[in-house]
Image (cartoon, rainbow, N blue to C red; front, side):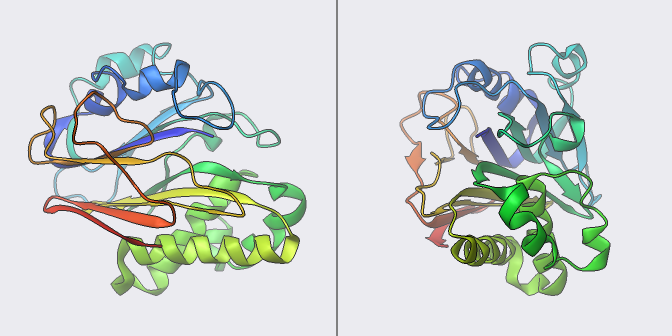
Length: 261
């Protein structure tokens, strides 16, 4: 498992998710409170953000936990953005270690992360899931990762059906994994996040498995006028609300919408 956090609102430093809050992703890397699989998230740190009017995200990722990477510590307080998606990684057994496997993944104007796992991905689901990808996205599969496969499935749906929005792309990726899990008789934890310059969609769900913890916060004391999502609350604000099982949260500057997956 991993821990994720996302922000949509007035521009704030990247450290607002990674370093500053009392339960920042840096803290959740070594002291998570609600993980059901694994104990720490020290196999990598990544963040994607959108700068100005450019629809393509910038990204910083490292194989180190946040406190080890001196560049991240120096840059994060000085770089600002109104849409951010960040993660700290706990590598799933069987999925390799290295920068290519650190979330978020990016394609065109999208960034995405996955908090969870697909049981038996390499042996049972990699081939059928990858066969669903168009050639240009199959070519982007540069590491044997369940999370990257899910992201590329979402990116493929967004290419096919942009009118469906981020939520539609997340739903399609989850549906594809569910179909293949049913055929293979296996399970998956599928908290999937997809972001672009306009906002973020994050699902809490699984196949034959309860989704990982997920919370949202609107207009918090630390982030006025903003929408925030995180695997665990980043501070003690009373406004953090758990996302129900099999639901998706869509964050925008205007607020947070919750709907069934």
